Amino acid sequence: MKSMRLIQPGPLQADSLKLVDLPLPQPGEGQVRLRVRMCGVCHTDLHTVEGDIHPPHLPLTPGHQVVGIVEALGSVVSGIHLGDRVGVPWLHQACGECQFCRRGLENLCPNAQFTGFHVDGGYAEFMLAQAGYVLPLPAAIPDEQAAPLLCAGIIGYRSLRQADLQPGERLGLFGFGASAHLAIQLARFWSCEAYVFTRSTEHQRHALEFGAEWAGTAADEPPQPLDRAVIFAPAGYLVPRALELLRPGGTLAINAIHMSPIPEMPYRLLYGERTLRSVANATYRDGVEFLVLAARISIHADISLYPLESACQALDDLKHSCINGEAVLVV
Ligand SMILES: [Zn+2]
Ligand SMILES: [Zn+2]
Image 1 (cartoon, rainbow, N blue to C red):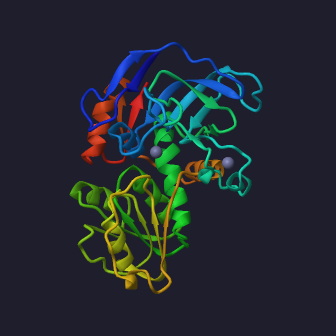
Image 2: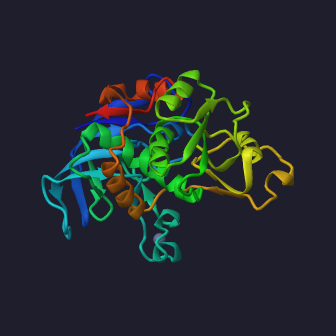
Image 3: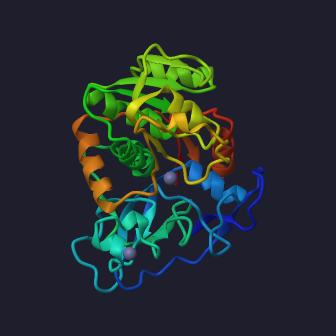
């Protein structure tokens, strides 16, 4: 099978991922083999390829927003059938026994394994997944629309929840890439006003197209203070700026697996009972809830399709904010 392999992380180049031919993987206990149809390209893939975060084993096949068809079952698999269309998210599996797993916070499980990081992901024709962690995909969502939902969408949903967003509130979104352009649709569904901060004038335009109340750069002054905010861009300098724009009692959630250092800031930015928290991964339940909601409100993902072999080009376009919405690899 064809697979795009990361051999050695480093600054992104045209051949950072190598097209190789691998033997078909055989599903073990509790696993299924999927024929990959589409795989979304996430910022975390870029962090992995560039060595900002370090996968435990190399070489590695990235990719954790996979739409695939079940085509082989391992032993002890129930509730999933040959021919099922499923989604594979970032969480490959958790231990199920630790204090976090027992509290329904398997996203924080210290033994969690992640797709396209601990195990090979979807930048390939086939992959293995844990039967208990793949997500049912509502039939109303086509393949290319489903792929971006599986990380960008789910983590955006969790981010809004971690930001304590309530119906009708004013929400700040810092960065307007794949995740934010899906999250804004949830916010609008909940009758919230969205204020979008991004350096890219193209992304500002994109945000207004998706119903943002206002769009500008982080240096600009929005017309209203924010009740809640989410930072999607991995830029630490945005943290004090976002806190500055937040009303007392407001919440700032950081949706980033990696971020540049947060500059020293005066305590007054946090004082007034503002909450600052990060968002780490997502639970299985987040995935199920979000996909049902996405189908119900017909969330639309803007996508740019690339052939599997052009994964490095897709990552490069993502790196340079040349994509509105999300890049999706067609396998
Ligand atoms: Zn991701
Ligand atoms: Zn656990």
